[in-house]
Amino acid sequence: MSMHYSQLLQVCNGRVTIPDPFIDLKEGWFLENRGMESWPPVMQTDIATYLLTIVEDKDIEKWLMGD
Image 1 (cartoon, rainbow, N blue to C red):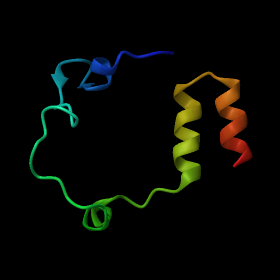
Image 2 (cartoon, helix red, strand yellow):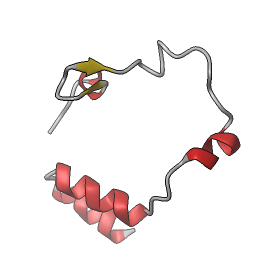
Image 3 (cartoon, rainbow, N blue to C red):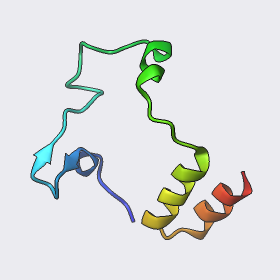
């Protein structure tokens, strides 16, 4: 499954396009230590499980499950 970068910015089944953080967002950035305070409590295993549900790639599965 390969997505074009612009497709990654589309949400709500393509009805909404969020701003491109590399081009459109010039202000409002936090330094990492301040921004991390807002991050949700997510474990690496949760991310790996999610990735395995959206990508059918045995190399990714082997890599994620090996870490």
